[in-house]
Amino acid sequence: MENDLLSRWRTQYPELFKECFEVWLPQGWISIVEKRLPIIEAIRVRTGLSVEIAQIKEKFGGLRFYLDFIHESIYDEVSKLVDEMEKEAEKTCEYCGQNNDVTTSAAGGYWIRTRCADCLKRDREEVPA
Image (cartoon, rainbow, N blue to C red; front, side, top):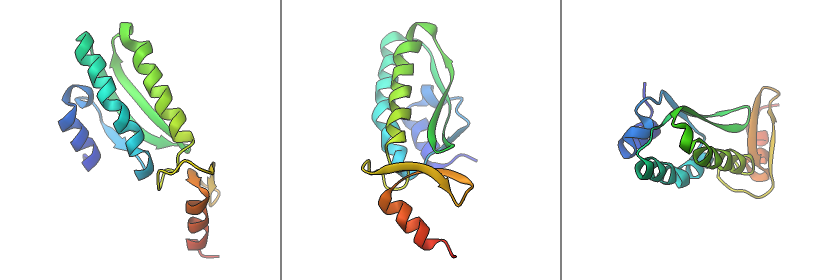
């Protein structure tokens, strides 16, 4: 089943997302990707070469952005943007999008999360002892 974010991006960027099978992003990281999708689309349009996104998700507390097919002559240019997104997510709270005092840690010993101090504190307060 397709989520709302994938549906929206597939409508905005049909060539980029035509083979994409999953977009699962925490709320705080959506803007990181949305800032760069128009740039990736512009590269595709300018060159007339293929760029296809297979999957975008959170994994092990980090942003993962997988390309399914990309023409080798634009690989470095698009990969630079992907690296920028992944690095920015490392410093951005996945819940609120704030980028001050952000840490990546195991939540409850199981899931690795990237959170600011306020969201981390709120999560700890919500977990029953």
